[in-house]
Image (cartoon, rainbow, N blue to C red; front, side, top):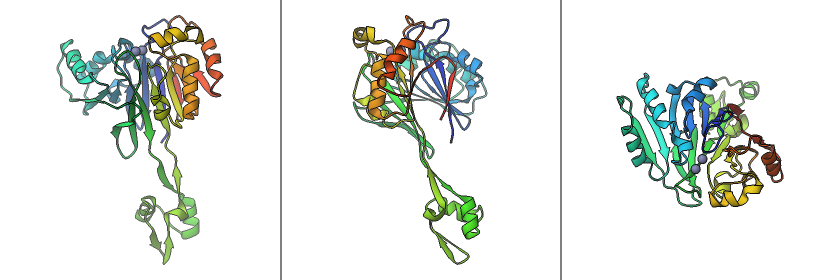
Amino acid sequence: MPYTITVLGTSSMVPTKERNVQAILLEREGELILFDCGEGTQRQMNIAGYSRAKVRKVFLTHWHGDHVSGLIGLIQTIFNSEYQHTLHIYGPKGTKTRLEHLRKTVDFEHKVSLEVHELHPAPEELLVAFENDDYKVECTPMKHTTPTIAYSFVEKDRVRIDMEKANKKYGLKTGPLAGKLKRGETVTFKGKEITPEDVCFTVKGKKFVVIPDTTLNNSVPIIAEQADLMICEATYGNEHEEKAREYKHLTAAQASLLAQQAGVKELILTHFSQRYKQVDTLLDEAAVHHPKVRAAFDFMKVQL
Ligand SMILES: [Zn+2]
Ligand SMILES: [Zn+2]
């Protein structure tokens, strides 16, 4: 099932004239999922044309201001709308307590149910944060100055039936028998046995990975393995490698090296330090390790 990713903010620490702080929006079959919710995310959603009331899940990478400062405003808006769902918020160690505190900072009616999921993945472990028949979201810890987790959104493979072939070869039409074949069952039609292998094929699910603030670590290639798209922080260029290490961030070159190690198909860099008005140099440095790398800008859209 195709889905759309919109990068709502691409700056680190503070919003600039050109770039807002962190948030990535995923839209799939009418459901909106947010990865982080920095200050101003609601307005970025307005501009991008997305309804805040359609947000069902928020996955927080860590509790630094540039990733969470927009959360209370979003919660308040959702709670004031005709929201018929439960809003699920996921985050690293400390998320439950911090959210409790956050809710007390603003006075509004808590009309909607909110469920908070605190995630504690072990290093180099992939922990399933959410799973249904369609997709799963996994997480793994990063190495930053506060508990931080990366997420992968993994669509499940889908079995499809080639109806044209099924019809031509066996005279089969859409209906319960086609459904059985899709579920992997062998059926008999007009005295002929039809196996799923005869008429079915698999559509591979797409994998999208968010790598937030972190220093180099072994969990990145594990969670990003063979991803179709990895959006990764790249706060600094090579000239500030020392700073990146000190503040526990990645350089653009390190991000692309990790993407290459993981066999990622496409890499998009984000979370740029405000010192970079242009990010061309960062892109050049990243291109050394990975053939398909782009720099994110606010409202960038990618279809997967
Ligand atoms: Zn940050
Ligand atoms: Zn941070």
